[in-house]
Image (cartoon, rainbow, N blue to C red; front, side, top):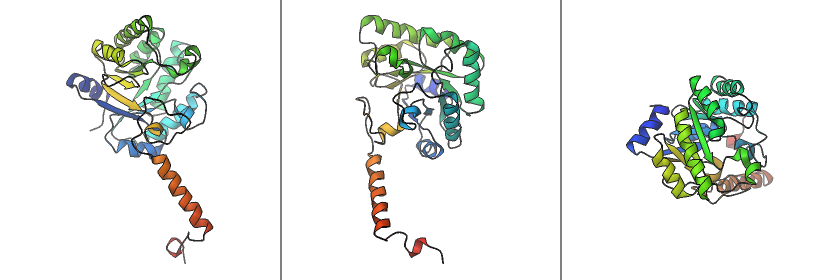
Length: 265
């Protein structure tokens, strides 16, 4: 049975952990979707792991729609969430609703995700009012990397922790069906999880969240530029791919490939 926002809310009530991953193309989406994940996020992280940018800020709506639409063709079961990129929702309510609608209508996403707390409540309410499910995102919000001075853990002092807890409650009140908590102390993430009725999805936020999400390239060892502390590599697929490519190169140069079984008469 296909997953939905109702699936997420039901999981929270029943204490069932949610497992999410990212995907950015059709082939990957088919693989991920076949493994019973609850949600697939087409994250603006594609700017780093697919497009080679140093952060997510250069990613455009056209990038997000292009990749989300490709992923959608490979998803049959998971809830598909499309990230709203930098400056696609900050400029005005009409821009926020229009761009969220594009991710659903053109990108075929089931829901959208945007970053921030109190400063985006009006946008969240407007998008939800347009009948588009919204996932929130608190803590280390990568689109604010220049404000934070880098990719740093958030919520370590009491004032910021209190603000994040308040933001979580206000996001819930604004209508989000779930929220990502990124790179915040485990104790704070647990407090937020207990304080809201919608599921929290952790990434670098400890085991107290209602679910977890990782970037596909990180958890399979496919992205070597950086390996954050919160990432666990479940399979060194990058090394396996390199092994296969080296073997291919060797066989071509040694005239072992193609063989007769790979040729036409």
